[in-house]
Image (cartoon, rainbow, N blue to C red; front, top):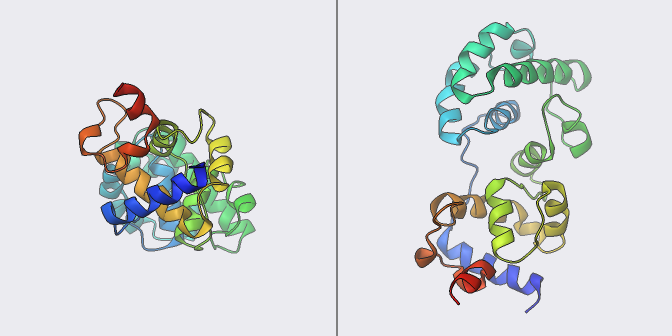
Length: 212
């Protein structure tokens, strides 16, 4: 069984385990998702979802956020951690979207990653969720689980993204990413993974090695 065949079997199993994959950040617009994803760096989605209602009530769109007080944004998003850097990025990316993209969140990788604080992971979230384009979202769960499954032995997120693009069908890429995140949160944890409850353990190289 090659890696593509293995991936397809995992996807088929995942569809039964996680039939309704979705982004766990709450948002009502492309701009809200962009900001929420930036806030989610080194922070839980749950915490972000608790923080953003107040933030978006005060600054509901690109124009409002571009003119926001940096100190005020810092105070609102403080629970998300690294709030000074995140506040600066959010205000500055809002200004750039307003000035360079007519107030609309852009829809290409090149344009998105030109925004302050936006890397490939966040850009891929936007491309998948908002623009419905094939995208692999490589977070810590994705990196850990695909490594354990034996798809690679890499540590660089960009290299993993391009490698997995060759393995995961385009039509399944976004949902595969969501399902891996759900699996990482519930079962395949970094420490003490619940292998006895794992529905894909028979495909896992780490499980096979640890079971010898």
